[in-house]
Every structure is written in structure tokens, then in C-alpha cells.
Image (cartoon, rainbow, N blue to C red; front, side):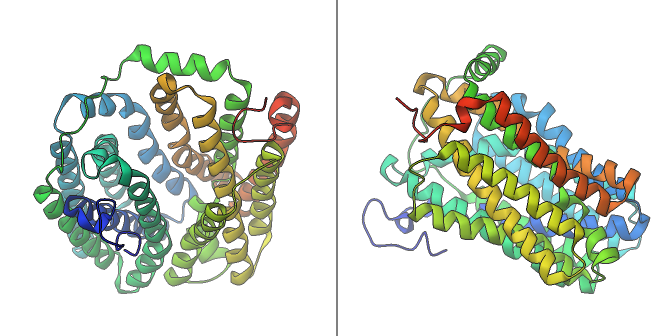
Amino acid sequence: MREIIGPGGDDSLQGHPAYVAYWFVRITASFGWQMLSVAAGWQIYALTDDPFQLGLMGLVQFVPSVVLALPAGHMADQFERRHIVLLGLIGEWLALTTLAVLTLLHQAHQLGILALVFVISVCKAFESPSMQSILPALVPPSALPRAMAANASAGQTAMILGPALGGFLYVAGPGAVYAACAVLYLVAVILMARLRYEHAPPRREPATWQTVFAGVSFIKNRPDVLGVLSLDLFAVLLGGATALLPIFAKDVLHTGPWGFGLLRAAPAVGALVMSLWLSRYTLQKNVGKTMYAAVAGFGIATIVFALSKQLWLSLLALVLMGAFDMISVVIRSALVQLDTPDEMRGRVNAVNAIFINTSNQLGEFESGMMAGWLGAVPATLVGGVGTLVVVGVWLVLFPTLRVRQRLQGDD
């Protein structure tokens, strides 16, 4: 928690107990979710030896995040956000506890696991907008950027260490992992139940269907924004190799749960290193070409991963995939924010969140389907080649993005 511990003063995050509690809620829940993903994916593949079941893992997470996104955002603007988050965390804790008990009693099967992961995903879909909206009420405006940075570092830490920890705990069985996840979520529930606002949250305009469609119209009429969002979206959809990691770990690389955990953590390592580099060296020119190059690099790294037979090379390819993906994420996020007028940012970001933040789950489903038809290695190889094809097509479809120099609109 090094980002939180800082010098005294009004901007010191350490001086805001509500935010400190909130930070611990985020990191404990994030660790629990990452560990659950490792255990559930490995357990389902161990039970079924069916890549299609791994694709269903992505689908049961994708459907709630899309279908419930707008109702959850509306609820976040209409009801007490702390209560929504608390109820969501309690629901996730109950589902994890049930999963742990069933597994320890040897009563778990793939349908039951998928059903409980679906329940957890539903709870997370309702929890997420409220969790994000609470933050401005916990710190003063001057400390908000640092608070957001601390949240990002916590998320990356969980993505790096959570899968590895889940993989190591899996040696004792999936029930041990689920039990540990349940304990982490229980801590999050207790902390959230005790959390109090530092000051009254600002009034927010309720989300409506009209505002969402206004955001869609805005994006359609901005070629650079549409180009960068769709390029990143298709790259994620085609490059969903992480859904197939249990297959690569067990059948291709011939490693165990510990190796699977390392594979799951590797992209986050690359993303974290690249985010630290980008925080020091701002992109000043050739932003469009850099975006295309990053997505192409992601596709090439995916091809290397598909063809690798060595654990070290597979880890390196995944690290590079995470690094290239972080470049595209930073460019996409900054470009969308800077090209969107302030009065439209809420609506545009709502649309962005719906199809960008859920593309990982849909990509996992696509990868699982392809692996079921072609096999894991050919499916991943097709995804990497497909990403390169998309880059080539987008270079033609969005020429203004190709020649764009700066994140802020060129004069």
C-alpha cells in the first residue's frame, strides 16, 4: 500500500480513513476474484477436459456485465451506493462459501461451478458502478487523481499476485482456494459495512437510454474515437488466449497449477511495467502509429505464445502481450477523454465501458469455442493472425487515426 502511505496534509491518502478502508475492500475483493478465476478454470478443465467449458466461463461472466450494465448504473444514481456495494459483496461471499463447501464435500460439478460463477458475476455487475461512484465522496477533489492511481496499482498487484497465489493454493485442492477467497470477501464485507463517507457525494444525473444512445451517436461521428475503440475491441476479442491457459499449462507446457498461476500473472506483470514506464514518459508524437504498432505487437506475441513449447518463452510472450495491451489501453483511454467534450464524457464513457470492459469475457468465450473446434494451439494462432489482419484493415478504414500525432486533437 505504498501509494497510500505518504506525507501528511490534506492530500495525504493516509489521512482519509474512509479511503484506506475502501482501498482494502478493493484489493481484498480483487485478490479473491483473481484466485477464484484460477481455481474455477482449472477445476472445470480437470473435470471435463473440454475447452468449450472454459469458453462458457467467459460467457457466464460476459452476459451479466452487458445485460445488467445500464440497470446497475441507474441504481447507482438512485439508491445508497454503499448499500448496493455491500449487498453485492455479501452475495459474492455467499456464493464463494457455497462453492467451497460443495468442493470440500466432493459435490461440485461443472454446471454447479458455472452457476455459482454466474451468481458472482451478477453481483459484481450491480456492485461495480456503485463502487466506482463512491470514490469522490471519500477524498477531496485535490486527492482524487492520487486515489485513482492507488486503486490502479492495487488492481495490478492483485492481477499479478492473485493468480500465482491461487495456483500455489490449488496444490491443496480447489476447496482450499475457494475457502481463502471466501475469507478475503468476508474481510471486504466487514470493511464496507463500517465505511462512512467523508463528505456528501455530489448529485449525479440518472442514467437513461437517451444518454446512452447519444454516446453511441457521438462515437459514430468521430472517426478517431470509433477507430481506436473498435481496434482495441477486436484485438481483445481475437486475442483471448488467457481463457485457454489451463489447456496450455496442462497439455502443451506440461506444468501444474503453480505454472498456470505464473501464466495467469505474466500479462499483468507486462502491463504493470509498461504502465510505470508510460507514467514517466508521455507519448508526444506518432500516437496513431504507436497504437497500430502496439496492437500488431500484441498479435505477434500471441502467435509466439501459441507456438511456444517452453514455459519461459510462453511467460515472455504473455508479458509482452500485457505490455503491448497496456500501450493501447493508455492511448485509447486518453484519446477518448481528450476528444470528448466535458458535457458528453459521461455518456461516451458509458458506451465505452459496456463493450470494452466486457470484451475480455466475450473473447474468452470465442477462444473456448475456437479451441473446441480446432484445438487450443490452432485457435490461439488464428487469434494472433486475425489481430494482424484487423490492424491491416483498420489502417485502411481509419486513415486519420494512422496519421494522428498527439493524444490531444491535432490542429
